[in-house]
Length: 255
Image (cartoon, rainbow, N blue to C red; front, top):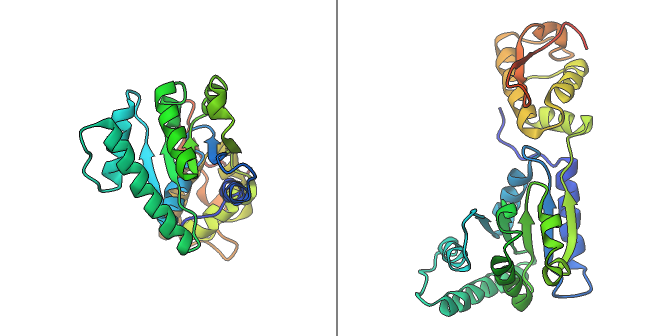
């Protein structure tokens, strides 16, 4: 399978939100919430954005404290953390501010991504630390969760008021499936099989990629005709495992 990043409709909405963030009115309103069920490509999208922009990526932990968070942040920034929290905080602001300034010179966006933010979106001490960092240096900060972040933030109006953009990752469309298969699969695939991939995967990127791997494996052993692999060609073959039951889903003779 080709290792390429594909701009699906979810990615397009995310990038549009970042463009809107740069045009915001209130400078301190620089929080972005990215929410959606697991398996829709949020982490892949954010990690790709981080690699393209030189931004900072952290994965929140359930037991994070402000000090633990700061230690991990400084670790990613490759800075040895001082002992006192105040010094850690000051050092983090200094390092992030310098990187943000460098990004501005290069005309690129720089930000802080906190994945699995559901773990911290109900903890006032962590949220206030994140808000302070974002406010002081007007740093785009992206909280990525699995559906609870927005609701949890409503309990903290001083934080929720800083959220200028909300992006909901939805299930893939047929166009998304076509884009993913076309870019990543090394064998051509016919429309009927593409439609079945969408149905069997229920629009989850994780399952779509599993289907692509199985289609490609079969197609490389059984050269498809000009129109690409069809359901008839792969009838009876395992396409993917059901997210709900864990049982294999087989390709039918026709859709």
